Length: 210
Image 1 (cartoon, rainbow, N blue to C red):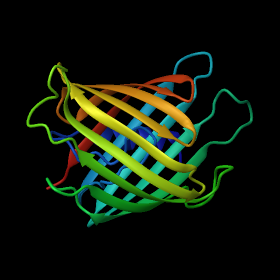
Image 2: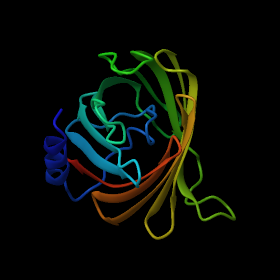
Image 3: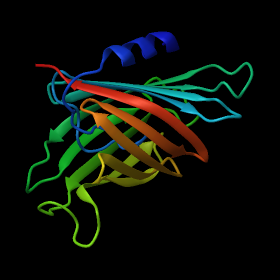
Image 4: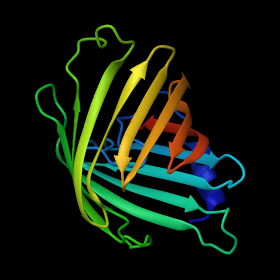
């Protein structure tokens, strides 16, 4: 998919209310976007590599479609890698049960690992407001297992901090990735990631369509 088209979709997606979390950084979670929700993000790697990552996710009834594009500008002559994925919500997250999703990653086999299949579980930690003695709230834990193109177990967590900050951590495809998001406005989040030893900065926009 053309990078300029993805950027245009990203800028057009700004809205007023947040969506349900559907992924950590690269790793899927047990939750999917609700019907009519969508989320778009562009993230740029700092010099000298200047690689780029684009995400686009759309929610259908109990189903989510997603696209991830890796633009490897640091490798002359290399082609963009576009991954398509899909996830079905087997069970929505409730106060008693985790969100359970089953999905496919890299459906068209564009990566060396090829298409992968996974089962993911996500559950909020049952604290009323925030973790005692720590400035954390709304903690969610994710655990999943993949086969074929996904390397065995993956796991991670996200949590809110004061000042509209959110932290992310995951272990996915043999790499540990970290992230920090700041939400100055509803529906807009500035992001900073450490992905596979590279540092990325970007913006994410998301909405809930009525």
